[in-house]
Length: 248
Image 1 (cartoon, rainbow, N blue to C red):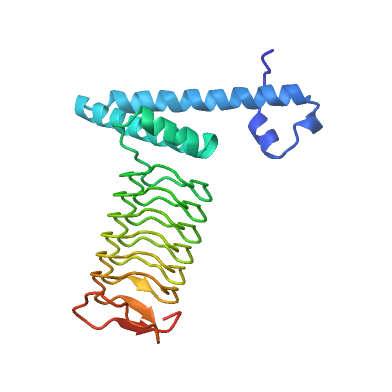
Image 2 (cartoon, rainbow, N blue to C red):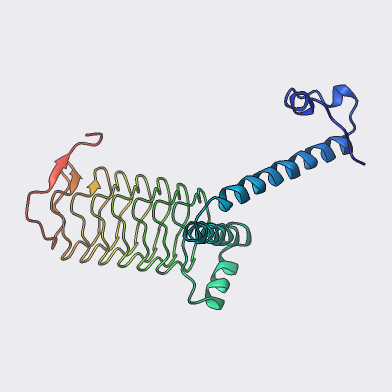
């Protein structure tokens, strides 16, 4: 049944469909028709824009769409099917680049996930749990992971420049050889974490718990620590570590 509607959008937006005598099935049909119509209009607009492009621009736009579609597919596998399905996918597609850059994954449970060499640049992973995950060689530059859990996570050689890890639990995590320049780990739990050979120049560890953490051969010039926090033994610095009170 095709329902003819005049001014229907205005009526629906005011929440008055039932008051106008529409049944539940009719309302569902109307909303589906409207959604289909919107998608059709969007597709027409996309086709028109594409027709105005040069061949090179069309190819570039198609490539961008493919990349975004792959990102969404990977996100769905990880969030909807879970870690086991995601790791199985990686085993079956070993050559595929795991690109989740700029994607929102707040609160995701990714314990034990195989994210070796994955691209998570600029991703939002607040409140996420990556305990025991493998992020070796991954790109998390500028990622926002506030309130997340990375307990025992393998982050060897990872790029964490200017990433925000405030209030995260990174206890026993391995950051060996990682690039943490300008990263923010304020109030983070870094107990027994391994920063051996890492670059923490300009990193902010104010209020962080670094008890038992290893900083052997780490670069810590201009790194920020809470006032009274002992200097990490074995670390390499060219300038004095800056001691600040929490909140400075």
